[in-house]
Length: 448
Image 1 (cartoon, rainbow, N blue to C red):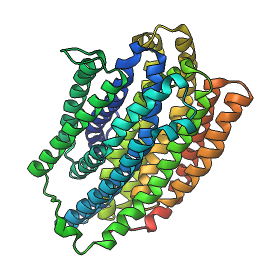
Image 2 (image 1 turned 30 degrees about the vertical axis):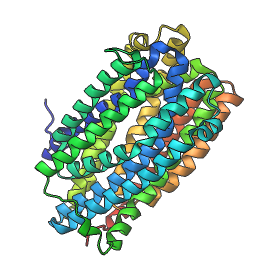
Image 3 (image 1 turned 30 degrees about the horizontal axis):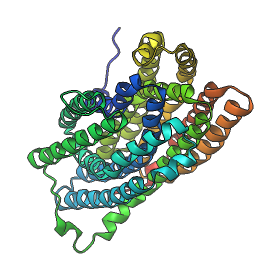
């Protein structure tokens, strides 16, 4: 017997597919650098892996700002308050992202060596990590504006357009890597620097396409007049969502940097295994993010219209979908892990260690899937501080402290660190489920 599927579930599925495709392509833009540089050896992979870990801190914070823009825009649209209000929200969101991107870009351009000294990056990877971060980090304004413009496109459910832009970006990055890393078509062989330059060029093209798509298909307009006089109330509303979420995301990524600091003491083989393992884990949970983002758009509309019972049903349905898909993808990756790892390296030590952490990944993805969906649901409903408080406590006590205890004190190495991260995700997921069941989010409103 075929079970009936509700129209809302079908709509989430249809919305999540283009988001899933886009997120996979975004992963490829970053991970393609590590894949195409892998034949230069583990030191080159570790250089880009360390550089991307630092860049993730900046990008995740930028994405929290774009998430705040999406939350407010969808709730205003759901409440039937489009027009000048939406123009003001989008303009203020872009302005805040631009200022933050410029400040962080200057810091990454001028002082990456300070960061990698604190990370204890191995000597053979240190110079490459600094070079990669200077080039990619120095142009982070491109990434900040791109993320914010795509958030506006998603708010108006222009998801296929965002996917088309990601396809172009990914193809450009692959072609640029092939030419600049290896020195084809008469270009010099730039190695790590070539991967960084190719990434920057592809992001610049993506930004240009996003601007063109906004002007062509979206009713929202970015106007300087929306900032005069400065809309302090709109800014306060955006920051009231973005700052707690940004604090949680920043804490998560800083905790990951501390964990990377432990891993850097284990040698370049373990670092390379961590990089490859993280790449495969990203594939396993990327659909959970896509389903959560699709649900976030829909529940933004529902909350704006005050349809609270539909919000609750929508979130629980998405949790079930995310769990099923992430576990299935993890199983596929585990069954084909040796051929997949062979694409990157023939080192048997990396293959053996990578297979062990994939076993832990089954348990990690259960907690992470619930965590991702519940965090998006609570934040969209205005319950933003609870995920922050729980997240910071669990990340540092369970993931970081637990990672040190299991990885170093008890000698389990990278597997022990993976177990600690799985426990962290599971603890947070369980606490968020209990919070959502209590229903305190029902009493909050972001739009009058």
